[in-house]
Amino acid sequence: MSYSPNQLEEAISKAKISSTERKQRKFPETIEISIGLRDIDLKNPTNRINLETLVPNDLGGKSKVAVFAEGDLATKSKESGLTTLNRQEIERLATEPKNAKKLANEYSFFLAEPSLMPIVAKFLGKILGPRGKMPKPIPPRVEIDKFVERYNRTVTLRLKSSPVINTKIGKITQDNKTLAENANTILQALTTKLPKGIQQIRSIHFKTTMGPAVKV
Image (tube, rainbow, N blue to C red; front, side):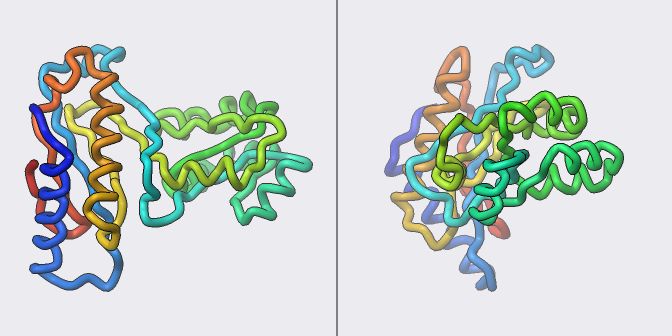
């Protein structure tokens, strides 16, 4: 299908109105995009997608990020207010699957000191891997708070067993143009991963957390 930025803005506006007309919420709803695909064989693992995409505008809040680190990096991570786990805590979680799953579900992204990557893979890989949340290595001499900040503008596009990708584009309090820019970036990133490009996009819908879906 084809679409224009104006069409994205219009559909986002309708999704907002549809939600607020039904009921005023006591919290700022998230705006979500749902992208339906066609002509894609998901039985073939090479057609599955797990793509992190950096959007141009923030998503209306901070992503929850946890860090696996020790020593000086752990100190800096804690000073930045980040949940930080050392080697012993990683090994302990391996014996507490319930707590490990809770951690995996609670945080959107995980980062790790490079030397701890094998430890995380060994003890938590079975839990983080299937969720597409294996940690990204932290580059040396990086300012961790600035490195983490980019994840406030990062979404993950996952395509596994159903030909539909759902992800957030921001909050209902953000203006339509900002939300449309994020949506357009997501669509462009996805298109580059599809063998037939935009021809494989069957439908685009927007909705708020509690509202009905609006088709582009």
